Image (cartoon, rainbow, N blue to C red; front, side, top):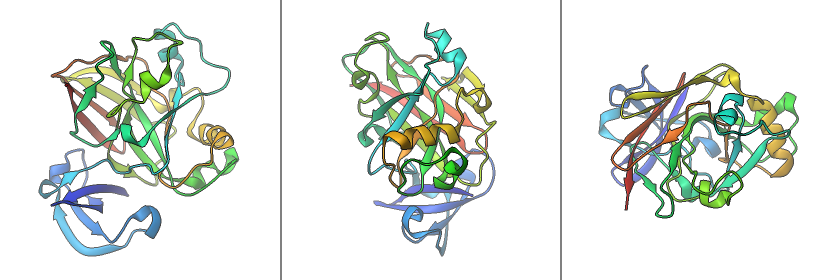
Length: 260
C-alpha cells in the first residue's frame, strides 16, 4: 500500500494510491478520513485523480528527523572518510522537510551544496530501546528522501550548518508500507543525468539495526523519520537545476533548486 498526503484546495488530506508506476498524475487516490498514522486507514469512499491534487510531504515529523551518515562504504570513501565504528547520527528539525516539487533553497552561507538520495523510515509509534529483532514492528512504512548537505565547512565543521537549514529534507511522494527494505534500488538524477545508482543492500547497517541504535539514544515518536544514508555518487547542485530521487517500490521525488 502507498499512502499519499495531498492538498485538496487548501486542505491537507491523506489517500491510498490506486495505480502503478511513478507518475502521480496517472494515479487514482482513495481519500481517507483523518491521519492514518493515528487513526488507521479509513476510506471515505471519495476517489480523486492524481492530477486534481497537489502532493505534499507524506509526513511532517512532529518531533525530529534522525540522519545517519556514512552508512554506505563507497560513499564514505568518495569523501575521504572511514566507515564509523558506530552509526554517525545527526538531527534535522522538521522545518527542513519539504514535499514533491517544493524548491530546495540553497543557504546563503554555502556555495557547495550536495544532493544525497536515500531511503527514509517513518516510525509508527512511540518507542525506546527497540531490539533489532522487533525493529520493523515500529515502522509505518518507507519514503524517498534527499538529505541536502552543505559541504563548505569540511568534515569536522558544524553539522547544523551542513544539514539543518530550511528545505534540506525533501520527502515523498508517498509512504510505502509492506515493503522489504533490504534490497531496493536507489537512483538520483540531476537535470535528467543519472548521478547515483545504488541499492539498500549496500548499507553497512540495515534498517533494523539503525532503528535499534537510534532508539537507544532517542525516544522515537509517531511520524519521526530516520534517514538511512546515501550511496556513492553525491555531488553539487546549483540554482536552476532539478534533482530527482527514485527508490524501487516507492516512487520518484523531484525538486527544483533555487537561490534567494
